[in-house]
Length: 617
Ligand code: F6R
Image (cartoon, rainbow, N blue to C red; front, side, top):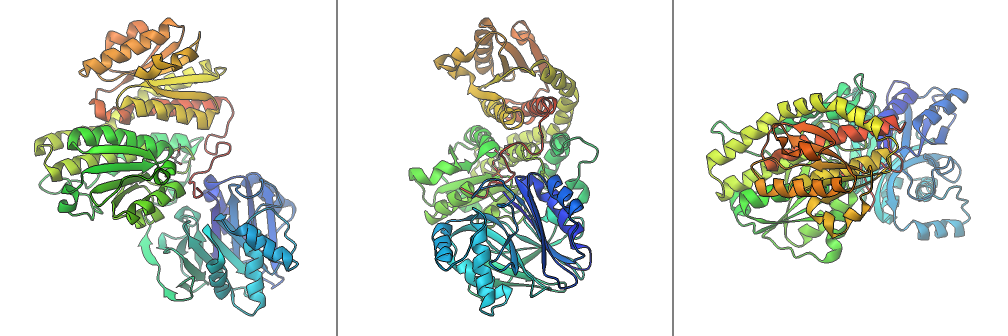
């Protein structure tokens, strides 16, 4: 959700914080703000502005900030209170001694606000954050230092939150805290950083420290110290970030999304790296569940949200087919409210690119209380979901900056296939040579994805131009093509703001076909030949919509000429097995959404109302 940056060192804090905010902006862009401690001990200097970071930069140009080497910044995704200047962070304490930025939601803020108002505090915004600012400053006024004030206040708060604060009477330290919301420390020489994720400081240091749940961190120029909310000494975990600044830059592309779409061949190759030992057996580094534990699994429940949920739907087809284990796929926001049947023989697989999604995090916590083992599929090292899981498969896609997930999704698919094959290996439901064949098919995917990118990019751009005025789009698929249809529709909704629906093609005649009217664009993901039954049924579905005037854009395996009579447009896909088809079929749909949104003049990387990781339930 919101992006947070903190810096203390020798450089210009304004430069470091604003640059960090630029890299954090994908997390939220309703407003941005900065607070610095004046180098001449003149107290706090604050600038904040609704809208994107550019608005804040303009304000700073008009009202320059003083020199400073310590400061904090924030880019907001609005929760409590609209995206106004007053609600923008940082928020100040009662007398303006302290400034704080915040991500998350303080659930008991209403009662705390009443308490403050009864004590005569004037709150200037509608945010829950300002309540924390006043509470923190009240603690400082009792003589506590900022670290102790943070510990005390956090103990009073309910909900999920990250805070980063500075105190104008203590100009050498920044204090942060986290509960169910991300915060990482960047460790430099004579300087230290705080960030919602490592992108905030990656151009300055690759040395990072992850913080545990309910921890407070204090950074100065020369040190980092960690404690619990109760003041007990704590420890963070140091790690090295294995990607660099270039991964967080656009490299000449107009959008991060386009760059990330084009990075997919490499991302998929990286997701497959090092997964086989010298004997060709699959190995998953952070599996941490023993073969015996895996053999004891009788049911798998996959939980995820949005695009990651669609990866879970594909995983169901693969796991059930290769491993003969029953798989349920559930939206994480619904999971714990339906009282799911869980026990020690249920494996819960949580798929989350960010590793922070609050719905998914709460769902895995529920699963663990029911004694189920949890395996996370995640792209973000050290994030909360993998940390709270029994096992992890990291997807190694590198940072995904565009709000819409692309390479995150394809690499989740790879991780799902690897998990399915690994379970098949352990449970003996597939012979070794069968597993090797699929792994080799997966290893061919990077080149196939590159080929689809090359062959479909021009067509998708042209089609985007042709469908500029279309208000509704349908996407049809069957089997593993069904989640692809859902994903194609989601991408279009979130980027082009057009009405788009994905359907299992067989469901069409049970209602949705009533939507079909003359000229309606319908994307059809055609299963590969060889699955004749599926393929033929899909052809019937295409005929049905075409007969009612739809424009059919068919994603078809090379050499399959049977679709030509019913297709207004054919997008050729490389020949791949049906279960792996999502790896190639998703790509043209990503490109189409990107092109249509670009042609419509939308901000592709930062679509309206969205943010990259959804850390509120
Ligand atoms: C869509 C998209 C979202 C996420 C969803 C879950 O492009 O990115 O639908 O997939 O918010 O996020 P993660 O995977 O971080 O849990």
